[in-house]
Image (cartoon, rainbow, N blue to C red; front, side, top):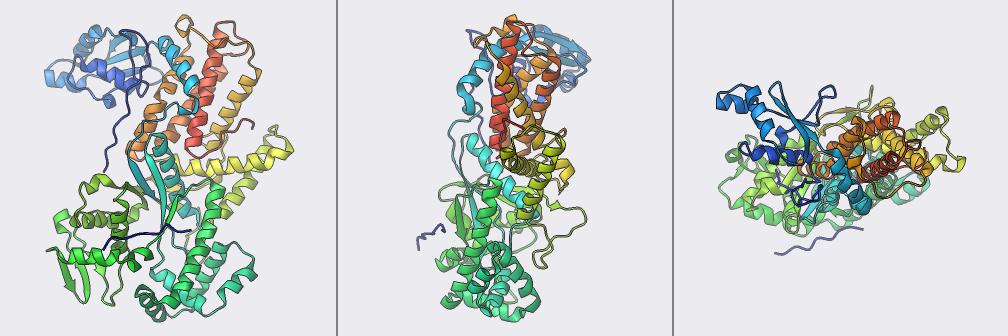
Length: 590
Protein backbone atom coordinates (compact mmCIF):
# COMPACT_ATOMS: atom_id res chain seq x y z
CA UNK A 1 0.00 0.00 0.00
CA UNK A 2 2.75 2.43 0.92
CA UNK A 3 5.63 3.84 -1.06
CA UNK A 4 8.66 2.46 0.74
CA UNK A 5 11.59 4.83 1.15
CA UNK A 6 15.14 3.59 0.65
CA UNK A 7 17.75 5.84 2.27
CA UNK A 8 21.48 6.15 1.62
CA UNK A 9 23.67 6.65 5.12
CA UNK A 10 8.82 30.29 -7.72
CA UNK A 11 9.56 27.89 -10.90
CA UNK A 12 9.76 28.89 -14.46
CA UNK A 13 8.00 26.87 -17.11
CA UNK A 14 8.94 27.40 -20.75
CA UNK A 15 6.24 27.76 -23.34
CA UNK A 16 6.04 24.92 -25.87
CA UNK A 17 7.14 25.03 -29.47
CA UNK A 18 5.26 27.34 -31.79
CA UNK A 19 2.85 25.68 -34.18
CA UNK A 20 1.57 27.48 -37.25
CA UNK A 21 -2.05 28.47 -37.34
CA UNK A 22 -1.73 30.14 -40.72
CA UNK A 23 -0.06 28.06 -43.42
CA UNK A 24 1.83 29.75 -46.23
CA UNK A 25 5.19 31.22 -47.11
CA UNK A 26 4.63 34.46 -45.20
CA UNK A 27 1.46 33.84 -43.22
CA UNK A 28 2.20 32.39 -39.79
CA UNK A 29 0.55 32.65 -36.41
CA UNK A 30 1.12 30.62 -33.25
CA UNK A 31 -1.72 28.44 -32.05
CA UNK A 32 -0.55 28.99 -28.48
CA UNK A 33 -1.66 32.61 -28.42
CA UNK A 34 -2.89 35.07 -30.96
CA UNK A 35 -1.70 37.73 -28.52
CA UNK A 36 1.86 36.43 -28.80
CA UNK A 37 1.64 36.81 -32.57
CA UNK A 38 0.24 40.34 -32.31
CA UNK A 39 2.95 41.29 -29.80
CA UNK A 40 5.60 39.84 -32.13
CA UNK A 41 4.37 42.02 -34.99
CA UNK A 42 4.31 45.14 -32.79
CA UNK A 43 7.83 44.30 -31.55
CA UNK A 44 9.12 44.70 -35.09
CA UNK A 45 8.42 48.42 -34.68
CA UNK A 46 8.61 48.95 -30.91
CA UNK A 47 11.16 47.37 -28.58
CA UNK A 48 10.21 43.99 -27.02
CA UNK A 49 6.48 44.30 -26.45
CA UNK A 50 5.25 41.44 -24.19
CA UNK A 51 2.02 39.60 -24.99
CA UNK A 52 0.57 40.90 -21.72
CA UNK A 53 0.46 44.38 -23.30
CA UNK A 54 -1.97 43.13 -25.97
CA UNK A 55 -5.43 43.55 -24.49
CA UNK A 56 -8.86 42.12 -25.21
CA UNK A 57 -11.28 44.78 -26.40
CA UNK A 58 -14.68 45.39 -24.77
CA UNK A 59 -17.73 44.08 -26.65
CA UNK A 60 -18.81 47.60 -27.63
CA UNK A 61 -15.48 48.49 -29.31
CA UNK A 62 -14.67 47.18 -32.81
CA UNK A 63 -11.68 44.86 -33.09
CA UNK A 64 -10.27 41.70 -31.56
CA UNK A 65 -7.23 42.99 -29.65
CA UNK A 66 -5.90 46.41 -28.69
CA UNK A 67 -2.48 47.81 -27.86
CA UNK A 68 -2.31 50.94 -25.63
CA UNK A 69 0.34 53.43 -26.74
CA UNK A 70 0.37 55.69 -23.66
CA UNK A 71 3.62 54.52 -22.02
CA UNK A 72 5.50 54.56 -25.33
CA UNK A 73 4.13 58.02 -26.12
CA UNK A 74 5.28 59.34 -22.74
CA UNK A 75 8.78 57.93 -23.27
CA UNK A 76 8.95 59.45 -26.77
CA UNK A 77 7.46 62.77 -25.71
CA UNK A 78 4.60 62.40 -28.20
CA UNK A 79 0.82 62.09 -28.09
CA UNK A 80 -0.58 58.53 -27.75
CA UNK A 81 -2.75 58.95 -30.86
CA UNK A 82 0.30 59.98 -32.88
CA UNK A 83 2.14 56.81 -31.88
CA UNK A 84 -1.00 54.71 -32.52
CA UNK A 85 -1.51 56.13 -36.04
CA UNK A 86 2.14 55.60 -37.00
CA UNK A 87 2.07 52.04 -35.71
CA UNK A 88 -1.23 51.24 -37.45
CA UNK A 89 0.22 52.33 -40.80
CA UNK A 90 3.30 50.15 -40.31
CA UNK A 91 1.38 46.95 -39.54
CA UNK A 92 1.47 44.94 -42.78
CA UNK A 93 1.20 41.32 -41.63
CA UNK A 94 -1.35 39.01 -43.27
CA UNK A 95 -2.36 38.05 -39.73
CA UNK A 96 -4.56 41.13 -39.72
CA UNK A 97 -7.69 41.83 -41.69
CA UNK A 98 -7.17 45.49 -40.78
CA UNK A 99 -5.53 47.68 -38.17
CA UNK A 100 -6.96 50.97 -36.84
CA UNK A 101 -5.75 53.72 -34.51
CA UNK A 102 -8.26 55.22 -32.10
CA UNK A 103 -7.97 57.20 -28.85
CA UNK A 104 -4.34 56.22 -28.30
CA UNK A 105 -4.95 52.51 -28.96
CA UNK A 106 -4.09 50.37 -31.95
CA UNK A 107 -7.05 48.06 -32.61
CA UNK A 108 -6.30 44.81 -34.44
CA UNK A 109 -8.81 42.85 -36.48
CA UNK A 110 -7.66 39.23 -36.94
CA UNK A 111 -8.36 37.49 -40.27
CA UNK A 112 -10.51 34.81 -38.63
CA UNK A 113 -11.46 33.14 -41.91
CA UNK A 114 -7.86 32.29 -42.74
CA UNK A 115 -7.20 31.33 -39.14
CA UNK A 116 -10.14 28.92 -39.15
CA UNK A 117 -8.91 27.23 -42.35
CA UNK A 118 -6.02 25.76 -40.36
CA UNK A 119 -7.44 25.78 -36.84
CA UNK A 120 -10.59 23.72 -37.52
CA UNK A 121 -8.74 20.85 -39.30
CA UNK A 122 -6.06 20.93 -36.59
CA UNK A 123 -8.60 20.50 -33.81
CA UNK A 124 -10.36 17.78 -35.81
CA UNK A 125 -7.17 15.82 -36.44
CA UNK A 126 -5.62 16.21 -32.99
CA UNK A 127 -8.88 15.53 -31.13
CA UNK A 128 -8.13 15.08 -27.40
CA UNK A 129 -4.49 16.05 -28.00
CA UNK A 130 -5.31 19.56 -29.20
CA UNK A 131 -3.65 21.87 -26.66
CA UNK A 132 -1.40 19.17 -25.22
CA UNK A 133 2.13 20.41 -24.50
CA UNK A 134 5.50 18.90 -25.30
CA UNK A 135 7.21 16.56 -22.86
CA UNK A 136 8.76 18.40 -19.91
CA UNK A 137 10.38 17.63 -16.57
CA UNK A 138 9.13 15.63 -13.59
CA UNK A 139 7.07 17.26 -10.85
CA UNK A 140 5.76 15.78 -7.60
CA UNK A 141 2.61 17.54 -6.48
CA UNK A 142 1.73 16.92 -2.85
CA UNK A 143 -1.87 17.54 -1.93
CA UNK A 144 -4.52 16.70 0.67
CA UNK A 145 -2.12 15.15 3.23
CA UNK A 146 -4.89 15.28 5.84
CA UNK A 147 -4.26 13.80 9.26
CA UNK A 148 -5.33 10.13 9.28
CA UNK A 149 -7.70 10.54 12.21
CA UNK A 150 -11.06 11.43 10.60
CA UNK A 151 -12.79 11.53 7.22
CA UNK A 152 -12.01 14.21 4.67
CA UNK A 153 -14.27 17.22 5.13
CA UNK A 154 -15.28 20.18 2.97
CA UNK A 155 -12.12 22.07 3.88
CA UNK A 156 -9.88 19.17 2.87
CA UNK A 157 -11.68 18.62 -0.40
CA UNK A 158 -10.72 22.04 -1.80
CA UNK A 159 -7.10 21.03 -1.28
CA UNK A 160 -7.73 17.64 -2.91
CA UNK A 161 -9.54 19.12 -5.91
CA UNK A 162 -7.00 21.91 -6.39
CA UNK A 163 -4.15 19.39 -6.25
CA UNK A 164 -5.82 16.83 -8.50
CA UNK A 165 -6.83 19.48 -11.04
CA UNK A 166 -3.39 21.07 -11.02
CA UNK A 167 -1.77 17.67 -11.55
CA UNK A 168 -4.10 17.02 -14.49
CA UNK A 169 -3.33 20.43 -16.04
CA UNK A 170 0.41 19.89 -15.59
CA UNK A 171 0.19 16.46 -17.25
CA UNK A 172 -1.75 17.91 -20.17
CA UNK A 173 0.80 20.72 -20.44
CA UNK A 174 3.49 18.06 -20.88
CA UNK A 175 4.89 17.59 -17.38
CA UNK A 176 5.47 14.21 -15.80
CA UNK A 177 3.36 15.14 -12.77
CA UNK A 178 2.84 12.67 -9.93
CA UNK A 179 0.35 13.43 -7.14
CA UNK A 180 1.47 12.32 -3.69
CA UNK A 181 -0.05 12.15 -0.20
CA UNK A 182 2.32 12.76 2.73
CA UNK A 183 0.85 10.94 5.72
CA UNK A 184 1.40 12.69 9.03
CA UNK A 185 1.51 9.60 11.22
CA UNK A 186 3.76 10.99 13.96
CA UNK A 187 1.92 14.05 15.23
CA UNK A 188 0.33 14.71 18.59
CA UNK A 189 -3.23 14.28 17.26
CA UNK A 190 -2.45 10.72 16.18
CA UNK A 191 -0.90 10.03 19.60
CA UNK A 192 -4.15 11.08 21.31
CA UNK A 193 -6.17 8.76 19.05
CA UNK A 194 -3.66 5.90 19.48
CA UNK A 195 -3.85 6.23 23.27
CA UNK A 196 -7.63 5.86 23.11
CA UNK A 197 -7.55 2.93 20.68
CA UNK A 198 -5.05 1.15 22.92
CA UNK A 199 -7.79 0.92 25.58
CA UNK A 200 -10.33 -0.84 23.30
CA UNK A 201 -10.51 -3.78 20.89
CA UNK A 202 -10.32 -1.40 17.96
CA UNK A 203 -10.40 -3.97 15.15
CA UNK A 204 -13.53 -5.59 16.55
CA UNK A 205 -15.16 -2.21 17.25
CA UNK A 206 -14.61 -1.15 13.64
CA UNK A 207 -16.24 -4.33 12.34
CA UNK A 208 -19.21 -3.92 14.66
CA UNK A 209 -19.76 -0.30 13.65
CA UNK A 210 -20.34 -1.14 9.96
CA UNK A 211 -19.33 2.43 9.20
CA UNK A 212 -17.01 3.74 6.53
CA UNK A 213 -13.56 3.19 8.12
CA UNK A 214 -12.43 6.83 8.22
CA UNK A 215 -15.83 7.95 9.54
CA UNK A 216 -15.57 5.46 12.41
CA UNK A 217 -12.05 6.67 13.11
CA UNK A 218 -13.38 10.24 13.26
CA UNK A 219 -15.87 9.17 15.94
CA UNK A 220 -13.05 7.59 17.93
CA UNK A 221 -11.00 10.78 17.63
CA UNK A 222 -13.84 12.86 19.07
CA UNK A 223 -14.12 10.43 21.99
CA UNK A 224 -10.33 10.44 22.46
CA UNK A 225 -10.22 14.22 22.83
CA UNK A 226 -12.79 13.98 25.61
CA UNK A 227 -11.20 11.13 27.53
CA UNK A 228 -7.43 10.90 26.90
CA UNK A 229 -4.92 12.42 29.29
CA UNK A 230 -2.62 14.60 27.17
CA UNK A 231 0.50 13.72 29.20
CA UNK A 232 -0.15 10.01 28.64
CA UNK A 233 -0.56 10.67 24.91
CA UNK A 234 2.69 12.64 24.87
CA UNK A 235 4.56 9.75 26.47
CA UNK A 236 3.10 7.39 23.88
CA UNK A 237 4.21 9.74 21.09
CA UNK A 238 7.77 9.75 22.42
CA UNK A 239 7.74 5.96 22.66
CA UNK A 240 6.54 5.67 19.05
CA UNK A 241 9.13 8.08 17.65
CA UNK A 242 11.89 6.22 19.47
CA UNK A 243 10.87 3.04 17.66
CA UNK A 244 8.51 1.31 20.10
CA UNK A 245 7.43 -1.78 18.14
CA UNK A 246 4.28 -2.62 20.09
CA UNK A 247 2.73 0.79 19.54
CA UNK A 248 3.52 0.71 15.83
CA UNK A 249 0.71 -1.77 15.27
CA UNK A 250 -1.86 0.79 16.42
CA UNK A 251 -0.38 3.52 14.23
CA UNK A 252 -0.34 1.16 11.24
CA UNK A 253 -4.00 0.37 11.89
CA UNK A 254 -4.94 4.06 12.08
CA UNK A 255 -3.14 4.90 8.85
CA UNK A 256 -4.53 1.93 6.91
CA UNK A 257 -8.04 2.58 8.21
CA UNK A 258 -8.00 6.28 7.38
CA UNK A 259 -6.33 5.94 3.99
CA UNK A 260 -8.73 3.16 3.04
CA UNK A 261 -11.57 5.63 3.57
CA UNK A 262 -9.73 8.44 1.80
CA UNK A 263 -9.26 6.26 -1.27
CA UNK A 264 -12.99 5.59 -1.47
CA UNK A 265 -13.70 9.33 -1.25
CA UNK A 266 -11.07 10.08 -3.89
CA UNK A 267 -12.61 7.51 -6.23
CA UNK A 268 -16.07 9.06 -5.83
CA UNK A 269 -14.68 12.52 -6.65
CA UNK A 270 -12.55 11.29 -9.55
CA UNK A 271 -9.32 12.16 -7.73
CA UNK A 272 -6.12 10.27 -8.60
CA UNK A 273 -3.35 9.70 -6.07
CA UNK A 274 -0.19 7.93 -7.24
CA UNK A 275 1.62 7.47 -3.94
CA UNK A 276 1.06 7.54 -0.18
CA UNK A 277 4.25 8.24 1.77
CA UNK A 278 4.42 7.96 5.57
CA UNK A 279 6.52 10.49 7.44
CA UNK A 280 7.50 7.80 9.97
CA UNK A 281 9.57 6.17 7.20
CA UNK A 282 11.93 9.16 7.35
CA UNK A 283 12.28 8.91 11.13
CA UNK A 284 12.76 5.14 11.33
CA UNK A 285 14.96 5.11 8.20
CA UNK A 286 17.41 7.65 9.62
CA UNK A 287 16.78 10.47 7.14
CA UNK A 288 15.53 12.86 9.85
CA UNK A 289 18.66 12.23 11.92
CA UNK A 290 20.76 13.04 8.84
CA UNK A 291 18.93 16.35 8.45
CA UNK A 292 19.55 17.25 12.09
CA UNK A 293 23.24 16.28 11.86
CA UNK A 294 23.77 18.45 8.77
CA UNK A 295 21.95 21.48 10.18
CA UNK A 296 23.82 21.18 13.48
CA UNK A 297 27.04 21.79 11.56
CA UNK A 298 25.81 25.13 10.19
CA UNK A 299 26.50 28.42 12.01
CA UNK A 300 22.75 29.00 12.27
CA UNK A 301 22.06 26.13 14.70
CA UNK A 302 21.35 27.09 18.31
CA UNK A 303 19.91 25.68 21.51
CA UNK A 304 17.53 27.50 23.82
CA UNK A 305 15.66 26.09 26.79
CA UNK A 306 16.35 22.54 25.70
CA UNK A 307 14.94 22.99 22.21
CA UNK A 308 17.08 23.08 19.08
CA UNK A 309 16.50 25.41 16.12
CA UNK A 310 18.12 27.27 13.24
CA UNK A 311 18.16 31.04 12.81
CA UNK A 312 16.67 32.12 9.45
CA UNK A 313 17.16 35.89 9.63
CA UNK A 314 19.54 35.77 6.64
CA UNK A 315 16.45 34.80 4.59
CA UNK A 316 14.39 37.66 6.02
CA UNK A 317 12.48 35.26 8.27
CA UNK A 318 12.34 36.48 11.88
CA UNK A 319 10.79 33.32 13.29
CA UNK A 320 13.38 30.63 14.01
CA UNK A 321 12.81 27.11 12.69
CA UNK A 322 12.44 24.79 15.67
CA UNK A 323 13.61 21.29 14.77
CA UNK A 324 13.78 19.38 18.04
CA UNK A 325 11.71 19.74 21.21
CA UNK A 326 13.22 19.56 24.67
CA UNK A 327 11.77 16.05 25.08
CA UNK A 328 13.71 14.87 22.01
CA UNK A 329 10.77 14.58 19.62
CA UNK A 330 10.92 16.16 16.17
CA UNK A 331 8.51 18.65 14.66
CA UNK A 332 6.55 18.30 11.42
CA UNK A 333 8.85 20.61 9.45
CA UNK A 334 11.89 18.60 10.53
CA UNK A 335 10.36 15.49 9.00
CA UNK A 336 9.14 17.53 6.04
CA UNK A 337 12.73 18.56 5.28
CA UNK A 338 13.76 14.90 5.04
CA UNK A 339 10.74 14.17 2.86
CA UNK A 340 11.62 17.01 0.47
CA UNK A 341 15.25 15.97 0.18
CA UNK A 342 13.97 12.56 -0.91
CA UNK A 343 11.46 14.01 -3.39
CA UNK A 344 13.96 16.42 -4.91
CA UNK A 345 16.25 13.58 -5.93
CA UNK A 346 13.88 12.75 -8.77
CA UNK A 347 11.55 15.72 -9.33
CA UNK A 348 10.69 19.32 -8.59
CA UNK A 349 7.97 19.87 -6.00
CA UNK A 350 4.65 21.65 -5.74
CA UNK A 351 2.97 21.72 -2.33
CA UNK A 352 -0.77 22.39 -2.16
CA UNK A 353 -1.02 23.78 1.35
CA UNK A 354 -3.32 26.35 2.96
CA UNK A 355 -2.26 29.99 3.03
CA UNK A 356 -2.05 29.88 6.83
CA UNK A 357 1.01 27.63 6.38
CA UNK A 358 2.92 30.21 4.29
CA UNK A 359 5.49 30.82 7.05
CA UNK A 360 6.10 27.09 7.42
CA UNK A 361 6.67 26.82 3.65
CA UNK A 362 9.12 29.74 3.75
CA UNK A 363 10.98 28.09 6.64
CA UNK A 364 11.01 24.81 4.72
CA UNK A 365 12.63 26.38 1.66
CA UNK A 366 15.16 28.21 3.83
CA UNK A 367 16.01 24.94 5.60
CA UNK A 368 16.47 23.18 2.26
CA UNK A 369 18.79 25.96 1.15
CA UNK A 370 20.87 25.47 4.30
CA UNK A 371 20.98 21.78 3.43
CA UNK A 372 22.51 22.61 0.06
CA UNK A 373 19.52 22.38 -2.29
CA UNK A 374 20.18 24.63 -5.30
CA UNK A 375 17.47 26.85 -6.86
CA UNK A 376 15.10 25.93 -4.03
CA UNK A 377 12.74 28.85 -4.74
CA UNK A 378 12.20 27.51 -8.25
CA UNK A 379 12.21 23.82 -7.37
CA UNK A 380 9.83 23.94 -4.40
CA UNK A 381 6.68 25.95 -5.04
CA UNK A 382 3.77 26.60 -2.72
CA UNK A 383 0.30 26.49 -4.27
CA UNK A 384 -1.33 28.49 -1.52
CA UNK A 385 -5.09 28.58 -1.08
CA UNK A 386 -7.68 30.01 1.28
CA UNK A 387 -10.20 27.97 3.23
CA UNK A 388 -13.74 26.86 2.49
CA UNK A 389 -16.59 27.83 4.77
CA UNK A 390 -20.17 26.65 5.02
CA UNK A 391 -22.66 29.36 6.02
CA UNK A 392 -23.36 29.10 9.76
CA UNK A 393 -20.79 26.36 10.51
CA UNK A 394 -17.34 26.33 12.10
CA UNK A 395 -15.53 23.08 11.25
CA UNK A 396 -13.42 21.07 13.69
CA UNK A 397 -12.29 17.41 13.44
CA UNK A 398 -11.55 17.46 17.16
CA UNK A 399 -15.19 18.07 18.07
CA UNK A 400 -16.69 16.31 15.05
CA UNK A 401 -18.33 19.51 13.80
CA UNK A 402 -17.85 19.36 10.06
CA UNK A 403 -19.51 18.27 6.84
CA UNK A 404 -17.63 15.33 5.41
CA UNK A 405 -16.74 15.26 1.72
CA UNK A 406 -18.81 12.08 1.44
CA UNK A 407 -21.91 13.80 2.86
CA UNK A 408 -21.33 16.82 0.64
CA UNK A 409 -21.35 14.61 -2.46
CA UNK A 410 -24.37 12.65 -1.25
CA UNK A 411 -26.31 15.90 -0.84
CA UNK A 412 -25.09 17.09 -4.21
CA UNK A 413 -26.39 13.98 -5.96
CA UNK A 414 -29.83 14.40 -4.39
CA UNK A 415 -29.94 18.07 -5.33
CA UNK A 416 -28.80 17.30 -8.88
CA UNK A 417 -31.60 14.74 -9.23
CA UNK A 418 -34.14 17.30 -8.05
CA UNK A 419 -32.73 19.86 -10.51
CA UNK A 420 -32.93 17.41 -13.42
CA UNK A 421 -36.52 16.48 -12.58
CA UNK A 422 -37.55 20.08 -11.91
CA UNK A 423 -36.27 21.21 -15.29
CA UNK A 424 -38.00 18.33 -17.07
CA UNK A 425 -34.71 17.37 -18.66
CA UNK A 426 -35.25 14.36 -20.89
CA UNK A 427 -33.06 11.70 -19.35
CA UNK A 428 -33.84 7.96 -19.35
CA UNK A 429 -34.68 6.74 -15.87
CA UNK A 430 -31.78 4.27 -16.02
CA UNK A 431 -29.33 7.13 -16.56
CA UNK A 432 -30.60 9.58 -13.94
CA UNK A 433 -28.38 8.39 -11.10
CA UNK A 434 -25.30 8.31 -13.33
CA UNK A 435 -25.95 11.81 -14.68
CA UNK A 436 -26.86 13.18 -11.24
CA UNK A 437 -23.53 11.98 -9.82
CA UNK A 438 -21.60 13.43 -12.80
CA UNK A 439 -23.40 16.75 -12.33
CA UNK A 440 -22.80 16.76 -8.55
CA UNK A 441 -19.09 15.89 -8.82
CA UNK A 442 -18.66 18.46 -11.57
CA UNK A 443 -20.50 21.11 -9.59
CA UNK A 444 -18.30 20.64 -6.52
CA UNK A 445 -15.04 20.38 -8.45
CA UNK A 446 -15.70 23.44 -10.61
CA UNK A 447 -16.88 25.48 -7.64
CA UNK A 448 -13.59 24.75 -5.87
CA UNK A 449 -11.37 25.82 -8.78
CA UNK A 450 -13.26 28.57 -10.62
CA UNK A 451 -11.84 31.38 -8.47
CA UNK A 452 -8.20 32.09 -7.73
CA UNK A 453 -6.91 29.78 -4.96
CA UNK A 454 -6.04 32.74 -2.73
CA UNK A 455 -9.68 33.79 -2.39
CA UNK A 456 -11.78 32.12 0.31
CA UNK A 457 -14.87 30.16 -0.75
CA UNK A 458 -18.24 30.21 0.93
CA UNK A 459 -19.74 27.06 -0.54
CA UNK A 460 -23.36 27.46 -1.63
CA UNK A 461 -25.33 24.89 -3.59
CA UNK A 462 -27.32 27.59 -5.37
CA UNK A 463 -24.04 28.72 -6.98
CA UNK A 464 -22.50 25.31 -7.60
CA UNK A 465 -25.62 23.84 -9.26
CA UNK A 466 -26.69 26.94 -11.18
CA UNK A 467 -27.41 25.76 -14.73
CA UNK A 468 -27.30 29.36 -16.02
CA UNK A 469 -24.30 30.64 -14.07
CA UNK A 470 -20.56 30.11 -13.88
CA UNK A 471 -20.80 26.44 -13.02
CA UNK A 472 -19.98 22.95 -14.24
CA UNK A 473 -23.65 22.19 -15.06
CA UNK A 474 -23.64 25.19 -17.41
CA UNK A 475 -20.54 23.84 -19.17
CA UNK A 476 -21.89 20.28 -19.25
CA UNK A 477 -25.18 21.51 -20.65
CA UNK A 478 -23.35 23.51 -23.35
CA UNK A 479 -21.40 20.37 -24.32
CA UNK A 480 -24.62 18.35 -24.44
CA UNK A 481 -26.21 21.08 -26.61
CA UNK A 482 -23.35 20.76 -29.11
CA UNK A 483 -23.84 16.98 -29.13
CA UNK A 484 -27.53 17.39 -29.95
CA UNK A 485 -26.77 19.74 -32.83
CA UNK A 486 -24.28 17.28 -34.29
CA UNK A 487 -26.77 14.43 -33.95
CA UNK A 488 -29.08 16.37 -36.28
CA UNK A 489 -26.35 17.49 -38.67
CA UNK A 490 -26.28 15.49 -41.88
CA UNK A 491 -24.56 16.00 -45.20
CA UNK A 492 -22.03 18.55 -43.94
CA UNK A 493 -18.82 18.92 -45.92
CA UNK A 494 -15.59 17.99 -44.15
CA UNK A 495 -13.58 20.68 -45.96
CA UNK A 496 -14.73 24.28 -45.79
CA UNK A 497 -12.98 27.45 -46.95
CA UNK A 498 -13.80 29.75 -44.05
CA UNK A 499 -12.16 32.69 -45.83
CA UNK A 500 -15.02 32.60 -48.33
CA UNK A 501 -17.72 32.60 -45.65
CA UNK A 502 -19.00 35.87 -44.23
CA UNK A 503 -18.35 35.28 -40.54
CA UNK A 504 -20.46 36.97 -37.86
CA UNK A 505 -18.93 38.56 -34.77
CA UNK A 506 -20.16 35.57 -32.75
CA UNK A 507 -18.34 33.15 -35.06
CA UNK A 508 -15.15 35.21 -35.03
CA UNK A 509 -15.15 35.35 -31.23
CA UNK A 510 -15.58 31.58 -31.05
CA UNK A 511 -12.68 31.01 -33.47
CA UNK A 512 -10.40 33.33 -31.50
CA UNK A 513 -11.24 31.60 -28.23
CA UNK A 514 -10.72 28.11 -29.66
CA UNK A 515 -7.25 29.19 -30.80
CA UNK A 516 -6.37 30.28 -27.25
CA UNK A 517 -6.84 26.86 -25.58
CA UNK A 518 -3.19 25.65 -25.84
CA UNK A 519 -1.88 28.87 -24.31
CA UNK A 520 -4.50 28.75 -21.55
CA UNK A 521 -3.19 25.32 -20.55
CA UNK A 522 0.42 26.51 -20.51
CA UNK A 523 -0.40 29.68 -18.57
CA UNK A 524 -2.39 27.73 -15.99
CA UNK A 525 0.50 25.27 -15.54
CA UNK A 526 3.10 28.04 -15.31
CA UNK A 527 1.15 30.17 -12.83
CA UNK A 528 -0.27 27.24 -10.79
CA UNK A 529 -3.76 28.66 -11.30
CA UNK A 530 -6.35 26.03 -12.26
CA UNK A 531 -8.96 28.81 -12.30
CA UNK A 532 -7.37 30.01 -15.57
CA UNK A 533 -8.71 26.90 -17.34
CA UNK A 534 -12.07 27.06 -15.53
CA UNK A 535 -12.57 30.73 -16.40
CA UNK A 536 -11.59 30.13 -20.03
CA UNK A 537 -14.09 27.27 -20.41
CA UNK A 538 -16.89 29.44 -19.03
CA UNK A 539 -15.99 32.26 -21.45
CA UNK A 540 -15.84 29.72 -24.30
CA UNK A 541 -19.25 28.28 -23.37
CA UNK A 542 -20.76 31.76 -23.21
CA UNK A 543 -19.39 32.53 -26.68
CA UNK A 544 -20.78 29.24 -28.01
CA UNK A 545 -24.23 29.90 -26.60
CA UNK A 546 -24.29 33.40 -28.11
CA UNK A 547 -23.33 31.77 -31.41
CA UNK A 548 -26.06 29.15 -30.93
CA UNK A 549 -28.80 31.72 -30.40
CA UNK A 550 -27.72 34.12 -33.16
CA UNK A 551 -26.37 31.79 -35.87
CA UNK A 552 -28.68 29.04 -37.20
CA UNK A 553 -26.70 25.88 -37.92
CA UNK A 554 -28.87 23.11 -39.37
CA UNK A 555 -31.13 25.44 -41.40
CA UNK A 556 -28.32 27.53 -42.93
CA UNK A 557 -27.45 27.23 -46.65
CA UNK A 558 -24.13 25.80 -47.82
CA UNK A 559 -21.27 26.50 -47.35
CA UNK A 560 -22.41 28.35 -44.22
CA UNK A 561 -24.05 25.24 -42.78
CA UNK A 562 -20.89 23.14 -43.05
CA UNK A 563 -18.77 26.00 -41.67
CA UNK A 564 -21.01 26.31 -38.61
CA UNK A 565 -21.13 22.57 -38.06
CA UNK A 566 -17.32 22.66 -38.11
CA UNK A 567 -17.40 25.31 -35.40
CA UNK A 568 -19.79 23.22 -33.29
CA UNK A 569 -17.51 20.18 -33.68
CA UNK A 570 -14.47 22.19 -32.63
CA UNK A 571 -16.29 23.67 -29.63
CA UNK A 572 -17.47 20.23 -28.54
CA UNK A 573 -13.92 18.91 -28.77
CA UNK A 574 -12.26 21.76 -26.90
CA UNK A 575 -14.83 22.17 -24.13
CA UNK A 576 -14.92 18.37 -23.71
CA UNK A 577 -11.14 18.19 -23.42
CA UNK A 578 -11.13 21.12 -21.01
CA UNK A 579 -13.76 19.55 -18.78
CA UNK A 580 -11.86 16.27 -18.68
CA UNK A 581 -8.67 18.13 -17.75
CA UNK A 582 -10.62 19.60 -14.82
CA UNK A 583 -11.78 16.12 -13.83
CA UNK A 584 -15.38 16.82 -14.89
CA UNK A 585 -17.39 14.49 -17.11
CA UNK A 586 -18.39 15.97 -20.47
CA UNK A 587 -21.99 14.79 -20.67
CA UNK A 588 -23.54 14.06 -24.07
CA UNK A 589 -27.09 14.01 -22.75
CA UNK A 590 -28.52 16.33 -20.15
